[in-house]
Amino acid sequence: MILMNEIPDRFWSLFRSVNRSTYIEALLKINEEYEYSNYFLSREVCIQLLSEYFSRKKYVIWQDETEDDWDELEPPATRVLNWLLRTGWLRKVDDYASMTVNIVIPDYAAVMIEAFSRLLGDDEDETQVYIQNVYAILFSLKNDPRSSVSLLNTALINTKKLNKSLQDMLHNMDKFFGSLLEQKNYGTLLKEHLEGYVTEIVNKKYHILKTSDNFYLYKTDIKSWIAAMREDSSWINKMCAKSAASTRGQKKAPLTEYDIVEKLDQLERGFDDIEHRISNMDKEHSRYVKATVTRLNYLLNQEDNMKGLVIRLLNHLSEYGCPDEDLTAVSARMNLSQMTILSEKSLYKRRKTKADFTEQLKDEEESEELSMEEVLNLNKVRNRYSQKEIEAFIEGSMTDGKMVVNEQTIHSDQDFEKLILAYDYSTRRKSPYKVEEEDSEMVHCKGYTYPRLVFVRRTR
Image (cartoon, rainbow, N blue to C red):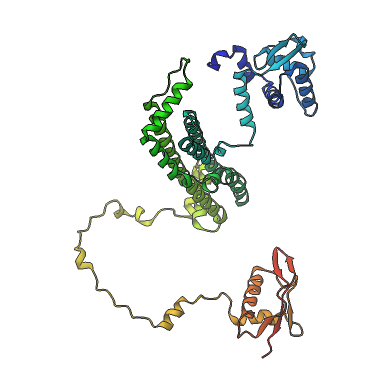
């Protein structure tokens, strides 16, 4: 049955109604109760449900085009329920045995309400249709003698859903590129990246495909099973026989060998498409990360280097239509062109004759071999602080031969680095200092966390 043919014309009036948000919320509330009901919902239950819902929120219901003055006198819950019944979003079923009026949701309305629920909610994503589902279905289809061709149809549907979900995910990644350019400072851009892209794409969707449900863990097995089933004529004949038995007495024609092989081919092409889309997502992900780093670098250095200042100047000129007085002021203070462009001889230069490549080659200079000590010196890491500076840091904080690390020890990043290097220096055998207490409490001060160490002079 084609549900589109069942929809009444007045059904679409919800989308042009001034109260559409109220009507949609009422439908979702009734649908939520409808899912947990073992039987029909009576009219009284629906009115009570909507009354309790409207009592907890602020709302305004305007007069609709299909309502008259008498409808405005009705309580809000009754008024909304009557409007949904008139427009075909809900349907009445009279139970004459119990003398009650029951409310049901038509099939076509259930499809639209499900769409509303998905648009308003963020509970579940279609990437939850894991590859393991297809893996488990094909495993059962290949090894369980009771399996039928319906499992193959289910695997094909799940593959199409996952492909569609990946395609939507790929196409929706471009909105994050637009938000990059809208951010004007470092903090808001970093917040948008962490709370938007990382949370929505990486952790919720992209993460699923790349970790616990990694596509490549199952691709090889699935493709080998598809190839084995395609070449197994006895298995195909068995599926055809089961299809003929299930459609006996129906107008639907049973599946042929060609139909089953075609479904297997579609399933294999679906997995090829998944692989291509994941590859494209990797490219888009890398492109977004590169663009984010570039934008962050620009926002951090826009006033510190020439490139950032030139970009700010160009943005300023384009924002105000590049007036002549601004151009005159800029040209009076700086030259943005290379001198070769402004010279008289820069329009045409005689092409030089090509010289023989071998004639321009110079003899290679023999490099002097370095000794082992010189190689070690080249590879030696250059310390930022000398040994004397570390010793001066320890001696400057010592009292009665002891340096007790406390809240007054660290005042800057340099002090924090020196404390780390001082501890490393004290662990060496030739160091004149040692740490007396290593398992000590932690100090939290001025954004730094470090142990409350005690440095003393080492006795020889």
